[in-house]
Amino acid sequence: MLGLAGAASARPQGGNCRGSGTTPGGGFDGNGASLPSSPFTYVPFTREMPKPPVKAPCAIIDPTNPTQSNNLPWQPGNCHHGVAPEYFNQPSDWQAGPLKLYEMDQKDGVHEIIPGVQTPIRGYDGIYPGPTFRSRMCEPMVLRVKNSLNTQTSVHLHGAHNPAHCDGYPNFYVSPGQQRDYYYPNICPRKPDGSGQWDTTESPSTMWYHDHGMDLTAENVVMGMAGFHIFTDALEEQLVADNVLPGGDQDLPIVLQDRRLRSDGTIFFDALDHNGYLGDIMVVNGAAQPFLRVQRRKYRFRFLDGANARFFLLRLTWGNFTQIGNDSWLLPQAIETNELLLSPAKRTDVIVDFTNAPNEVYLVNILKQDSGRGPGGTTANPQRLNPGVPMMKFIVEGPVVGNDATVVPGTPLRPHHSIAPSEITTTREFLFHRSNGAWMINGKFFDEFRADATPTVGSAERWILKNGGGGWWHPVHIHLESHQIVKLNGQTPAPSLRYKSDVAILGPNDTAEVHMRFRTFTGPFVFHCHNLEHEDMRMMFVFDPRTNPTQAPQPIQSYYP
Image (spheres, rainbow, N blue to C red):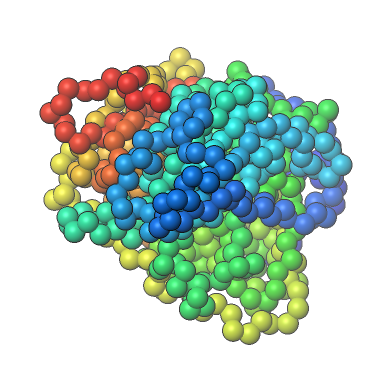
């Protein structure tokens, strides 16, 4: 965290907003030139926050009925790119529940980020954000993805423990006019004690999916290609059933982004600016500065920073957050905090208790940022006269609701098992840095055919992630497995970061020491900076877990489906 004290309490000013962003009308490109301001005027907090639809399966197959497979609406794998081979050779306990089949079309659409302004987008099912998926432990799914766009794509389920073939490897493409089947077993890793039991401490909760096409991720995501994937298991379901955590209509995924528009309503994007996209319109679930009606009770908000390069430091104008999750995973216990630092791709699950709130509460961003380099201070001051840029307004209505969720700071949630130093078999160092206007790791550009690390399946490793400096920020995302941040600049990290993450925020000159286990799946997978312009401009490496480290390396080309 940035060490700021106290929650902002002043009421943000409404009125007409023109590109009502962190730096209204501002921002600079990679050459230091001012970016064009979004030309539209709108009144904030006049449109209700959209809630993306929950994706429904097209078929649910009973695994105990072998004859049912003859009546499938389509056969998994019977398409251009096939399906992950694990689908055909899965252990029996991977499918304790029914197999669900889904279809999703990547296609052009039109969306009103600002009311009355028609903005062309690229969307999953043609909508922005994409539909929300909900899945359950050991209830596998096959998602058939069609590409009706004129650009190549690759779908990454961010935060999942899945086979490499469905992880969104940058050039495991879904090409225009073609289809690919993604097999998600919806499992977590097994315990490291050899018992064969599921390690449910690793069971995810809040994931998201987005495009991961090589050299195309930044543009595809800024054009709208992202959505939520909510995962649950028996433990979390019991927390909701016991009224510890809110559920149903009181459990809301919320993606925070920024966009910049041209005069014709199209999204401004400069493919030659590799420093990081910044918008001047603050967007929540696809709408510019919306409102949300809430009752006087507790709510669970699953916040996602879905921006390409913008960081957010969030506060409420009244009250604090009770944080219950970091990235994909629930914390061991709930933690009270007055602010939330989010980098691109980071998630945080929080409880907000509106029981005694005033009639209006605002979610505000107090972090200033005018370039892809990273944040540059805050709007906070001792007098709390400038609470920051309002992202959305909560309209608090009605009487106090009885029988509310019971979660409070300190409430136990999901157990956590630390990876002990004695379990570490290998240490690797990775330096994230800039050279000649492009982005590198350890002095190399991304090569999709080169394995930069080859961990052994079943081992635990220590990775040292270093920021080469220059004032740049790099949120580092590692696919496949959670990582445990054990040291940040030689110190124990903040409480919310001590357990499981899938994004490690590296500020200028920061060093993070993380521990990871490698389980279940061989590669290839990637890790990279999640400033998407940095990722596209080659700040990405390949790691290729293998079951037998003494075997001759298998060329990554041979993995291609």
